[in-house]
Image (tube, rainbow, N blue to C red; front, top):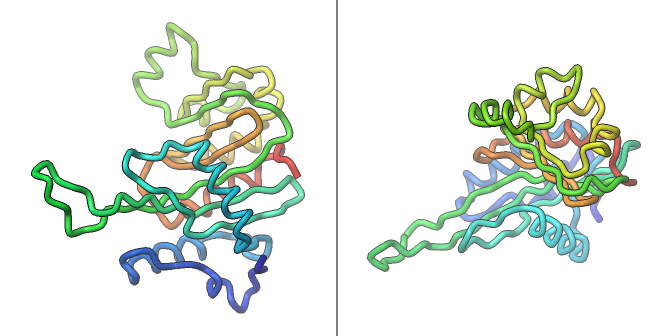
Amino acid sequence: MVTVSSTFKSSMLNPIAFDEEYDRELLEGSFQALRHHQQLEIVDDEEEYQRALRIITDGLTVPDYATLSIQNLFRYVFPNGKFYIAQCLFDFGYPTSSNRGASYDRKYYFHIAGFAELKVDLGNTFMRSETKTDKIVGRFFGNDIDFDGTAKFNDKYYLVSDKKETLESCFDRQFFNTIAKYDNLMLRVKQKQLYITFDTDFHVGHSRIVEDVLTNCNFLAS
């Protein structure tokens, strides 16, 4: 395990995928956007890396014909618990066109994923940006979970869970207000495994957003 210091913050990163200059700028920019550099470690232990890859694969939808790998994995240990942020790479190789000719351009994209183990079982919980259709349907079926005193969150995000009462005891005002500051977040919980991702293309600031959300989550496991 390599501890990041102020003198070599990005020297231990793997900043290159296929387009060296462009990918380096993206991945290093994503790393530099993180606020708490002194509290993170860059994971270089193969066993921990593979465990993280299995967790992400179990929680995220991997597109057809894509190979998922982790470009860089960051581990945080805070008083509120432990969490990870991963710079993920989805690689489609050289797709074949309808006339069976292979493309000359490699298709791939980066994605940020944060994940953590929770203290409590939140069953199957899912959150995404709320749409106009959600607002209309919700009037009749009431699937969307809204919370008192969190109008900005309620208006911005659609939240469902089969553990509503447990959710209400865990999600506090601090957590709601942090999420509500940002757009396009996706949250998923499978029992005690929490995932934070985005429903938009990779942006260097996504890593900072995930870091902010998880440092303000008070139900993470140690």
